[in-house]
Length: 369
Image 1 (cartoon, rainbow, N blue to C red):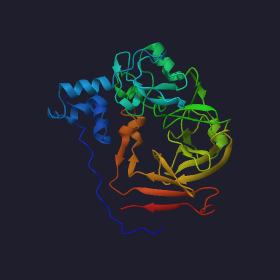
Image 2 (image 1 turned 135 degrees about the vertical axis):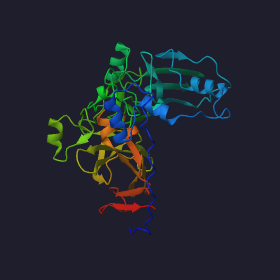
Image 3 (image 1 turned 90 degrees about the horizontal axis):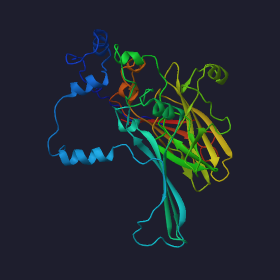
Image 4 (image 1 turned 90 degrees about the vertical axis):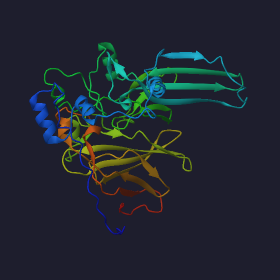
């Protein structure tokens, strides 16, 4: 695809996090903050300063938000819904599943961001023939969730900045711990007889649809390598397996009702370089049989959030962002806190879809202004 006239915009300046005069952090942390431009969470909050106006932040609004992001109580739950307004249509029968963050604290430590919240599965079952409705809910009890519940403390690092409580060395005590907790809190999908709780940067969590209990990590019969880190060495799958490296699966698979398929993609960040290894998979929605796998590479070290699907193309939108790994590796922030915008345009990558009109062609790249 021919590029249009190129325009460049200056990258936004990083916030000044170098004033740590109000912080109890060690001088080493202050030096790292000044050098890397990223502050520990508490310092960052103080550095932003200022107060919003009463029109946008008052007691009424604060109470509403506090209630919206209060940790769910009475979980697990499983009961008939007695209060029904109107009548359920007699021909309506089915089940709706929903998933989202439902627990926002552990051991008195409030999570740094709501998207670090532990996944809460909810199920509504309707039967119009009997006029009954039933509700059930349960947290996705991954091994990480169960361990933190038993210890009543945050044990794992999280994407949006929640980390184990720091000691004398501050956030540096989390340095080189690169394994992120899977909160399983983003989506829930079902195909091929499997119910899956999904998150952006890990394998799906298999869920029992009757009890909502966690069954285990879903590899689709070994199709997706299971490892502690979603990283590719670039040498080969055998080396990756020996190093304990695996892949993640998108939280946003797409249904192609025209063909009766579900389409999703797995990815692994590069150990070196800036090319993201991606494989797009297509399954029969009813049987769960694998129908196609298309490996490709995206010109970015950062996985895209989502993708689009047409009859002929898989379409990925790459945001104009870059990842500064050093603050994350040193324990100063989560991966999201280490992202910076570049001021450039977005990049669209179109990958030909098997069986479509573009099959056999090379991927296309479109760079926006």
